[in-house]
Image (cartoon, rainbow, N blue to C red; front, side, top):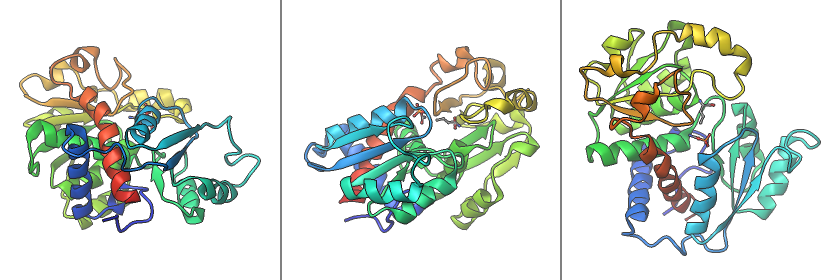
Length: 302
Ligand code: CP
Ligand code: NVA
């Protein structure tokens, strides 16, 4: 059975049932209950990167190998990506060769343009607005840590209302997590994200007091304050996020686990002490990128 969507640009391109199916498949592939080694034989993924990556690149590339397929890394210096050739031409040409394209772009409109012109599925490996593959791995990690069904697990997102956070807010609504969002007032999640979450039954509590936000949380999730492409806003953002650091003092008195998509900026959004503690689920999250994406690819490519 394949998925109903042609592309995976954000987490709600899946229905709640399809999300369940992808996570179940991911777990079966991870545990070895299902042998994935020939599921994508002879299939090729093109990986377009406008920004750097450690986890996304390696997890997709090794993931395709594990499924019997192959992946080609195409960085900004390797192909005519937007410069020298319009994106719509790149998309039409690339999709004549490969079976699926994973793209990491700055502007979300650009991945939508790739999708509009592609004859094969486009998978979002991060844009300025969304990171749905991260959300798949996050939901798998929560399920493993707290058991299924995981609805009712309470998660607090603290820090920037960024790409990782936005996809997580929508995914949390689909999974039935009990979500609190704690950001400085001018750095919250986009209105359309909260509307999409609401349409899926999500009722996140939105606050700006970190101490109240983490009280009783099962998981505290944070991400960098200065995302890739925002380097010129560094000073402004560090000032705005003062007081929102996840540190030992903030988590004292809670049993909360820590989630972070990585890479982490120790001493900014999180301290090294918390990141290196038993609270951290971050290495499981990183590993689960591979399994979650393989679940997605098998469901998407059939
Ligand atoms: N979490 C994540 O997407 O990491 P990379 O930027 O290393 O791919
Ligand atoms: N918010 C971060 C996530 C990196 C995986 C960024 O966009 O840089």
